[in-house]
Image 1 (cartoon, protein in one colour):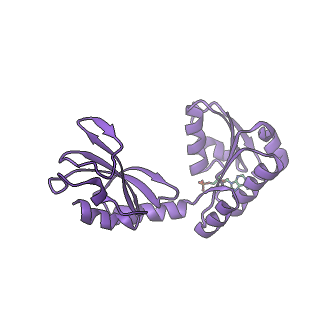
Image 2: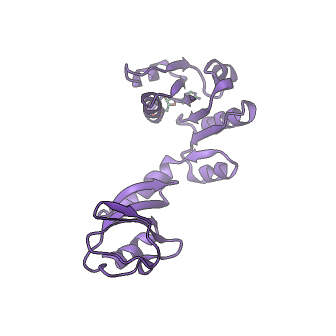
Image 3: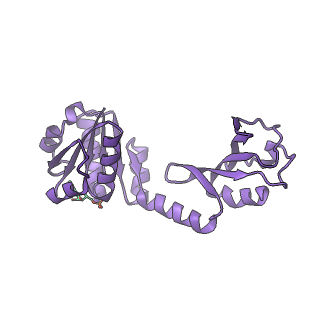
Length: 214
Ligand code: AMP
């Protein structure tokens, strides 16, 4: 899989490095030649000095055969223009753009461009760590609006049905691990003390969930 990472700053270099370590073929573009220094000596991909949305630079980076483009510069406009060129002009199948402004990130997402808003994600994450420091997070979706958290069933939960722990669209029990064996519970599954319960929960659902679970 050929991947172009536009922008080799703190985010782009990290992403390029991860993809490279996973065995993907990576080409990094940055307008600043010094950005190359962010990549570890172990990086096997290519580095091209140039402006991310410049078509000649993108062609040099192999966009005509690219499977994915991630535009990670520190400019929302640069990233959206680069993403649009990759999508419309070169038909790159997978595109993702870093967009600081959460409102614009949402608008572009609706236009069919995958966006990651570090601002919204960071705000959700920080709020969550302040308000719910006791929850163990397993994974996070979108910009952190939905998470899967893990909790251990207390004596209080022993004997309760899963349906008592569900709030539609806010809290859902996705898996229970009992004695090391995972299952997907039904509404009538009975919880046992010590079960590890995996719950999909929205930011709004967390407070209600804690009241129900603890
Ligand atoms: P950071 O905010 O640390 O992730 O850094 C952003 C990176 O994007 C820096 O290395 C910049 O040189 C790079 N950058 C910003 N604008 C452009 C652009 N138009 N074309 C290529 N690289 C860019």
